[in-house]
Every structure is written in C-alpha cells, then in structure tokens.
Image 1: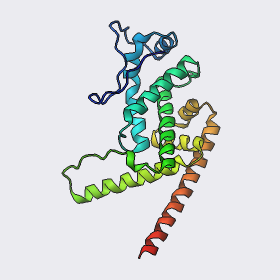
Image 2: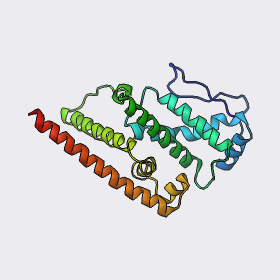
Image 3: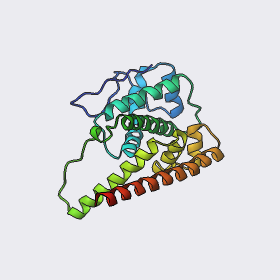
Image 4: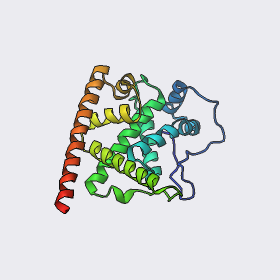
Length: 219
C-alpha cells in the first residue's frame, strides 16, 4: 500500500512520502494499476491529482476549513488507496469523481459524529476579520449560518439521500455521474435525490418553525 506522511504543524498540507524516482505523468488507468501493484513511486502523482477535489469537497461539506482538515484528507487518501487495492473502484467514473464521492462520505460521517457529540461549532476555525462594510460581514455570516443549518440537517438524514443531495446540488455532478459514483442506476439516483430534497426541505421548514416559536417565546 502507498505510504502517506502524517500532517505537520509547519506544513498545512498533507504530503505523500517522496521518492527519488518518479514516473512520468500517468493516465487514471495507469495510476490505478500502479497503486494496485504497490508502486510507492506514484504517491506524489496520486496526491497531486486528487488533493484539489478532496479539499473542495470537504470545504463544501463544512463550509469552512476544519482544524482537523489534514487528518480528514489523510483518512480520505487511505480509503481511496484501500478501495483501489481491493478492486472496489469499478472505473465507471473518473478517479477525481471517485475521490469526491469518498470525500463527501468521510465529511458527512465526521459531521454526524460531531453532531452526536454536540460539538460542531467547537471544531471550527473562524476566518480572520477583513476590512469590509458591516452589511457584507452580516451577509457572509448569515450565509454561513444557513449553510451550517443545511449541513446539520443533511447529517441527520438518510445517508444515501443526503449523499445524493450533496453530490448533485452542492458538488454539481449530474445524475449520470452520481449514479456511477454510488453504484446505482440513474433512476435510483434520481429517486434518492428527489426524496432527499423533500426530506431536507421538510427538515428545514421544521427547523424554521421551531426557531420562530422560540423567538416568540423569548419576547
């Protein structure tokens, strides 16, 4: 299995173990074959090819960069290598698309765990204040708050439906890609998406009604 180094406090990005001999740029198929064959020289290529989509997927799940971001990236790379070596990757979508699916799963699982611990906000890292008009700061804060509520509701939903909503409506993959990523038919992916949207809207409506009732009671 490929060796990946642990995060360093002085280096925010998780970097793979370097090798003096690195092969030329490989296609997805060649890279996968090298990983399956245990060729550690391709670790750098695997990292460089997938870290961007992994980073973006995690940011969209949490709405910010978590303090354990590098640990999550490490976990995702370990799962990617494991699925490749076990032959779980069917090859019906690109390697980057597959990495996005695993990233969403890892992110949702982490979010669910934090919801259970009631420590979601304690794990966040706030962005430094920037010179901007108060209205822009308020708008940004409101948008981030709404995103947090949406993600918390998704974390409590049926996992397959939540995954479909995240991949399609948040990550922007079309139904064909979502179907390939999750190993189901397009019809099944569409069904999960439709039901997921309905469940999410129902949850958001209930959350809003609860908040409105609490505000009235506080007056």
